[in-house]
Length: 247
Image 1: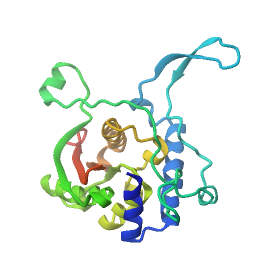
Image 2: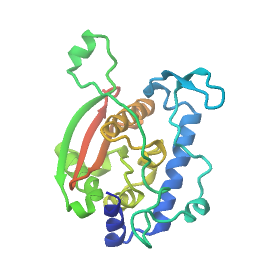
Image 3: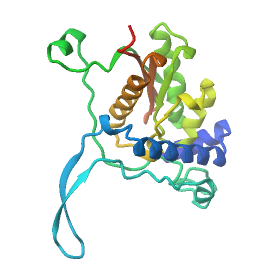
């Protein structure tokens, strides 16, 4: 999978510095979101026990925050890391998504069912698209899927107020922003997978939860949002959501 990141960087001219810059921003935003409590409503604390390595004593532990976030990440620190997938490459452990464990869930139902069950409606599912791309550069998938999903919702890319685009690798993430001409201030405003981690199978739910909660916080200033990610065999997927609090 990592070599596809190198392929994207080489084919589309995504520099090492651009990738590292995206990584620094991801960590900074995730750290700020954690400190300000913006993740509290979307994280369910896990209560468990751990064994102290020295004493052997079992101690209770509550996991309520993602532990891969590094607020002190800088360009200088990342520049010292070596490429991990290709000699003289540009993809490193610092500008790729973290290998992590995680779980997520999203409930999709009719509004009348949610009302009957007294469940909050966070958003309205408007459209979904899956588009095939060259497997050698599978990371560009969101750049193809997002326009298709947006068109399917009867919208224009400029109608979208927020984006959650999975940061599988900084190379493909940066390419997608450049290809679509997106304002980085609208994309992954609370950090992404480079800082938070990329638990395969759960990331889509995590991105959706993060997007919907942020849309709720912004209210009338955020009507439409998009979640998108690349898919390993050469695809991109994207979904459009509308904020439920806007009449």
